Image (cartoon, rainbow, N blue to C red; front, side):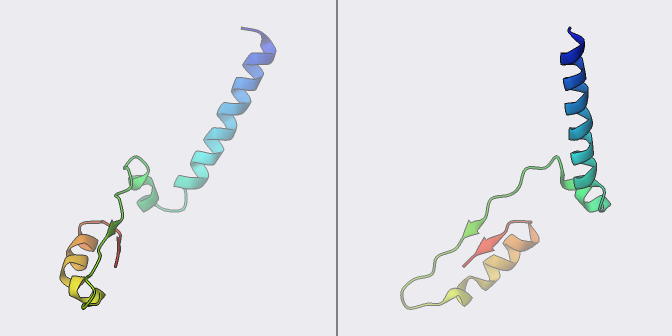
Length: 71
């Protein structure tokens, strides 16, 4: 491998290492969620003669399970 290519690869590795450290460093909670895929947002639609409060019980259970919701 040519020396110039090796230098470029080392630079890329160093920069990506710094970016990863910046993302993980703020706290241990961030470090534990880095490898987990994000859960999809659940969109709950109410009928014409109801409002979003009809989904309160379902929304609470979804949020406890880690799913973001939109009503």
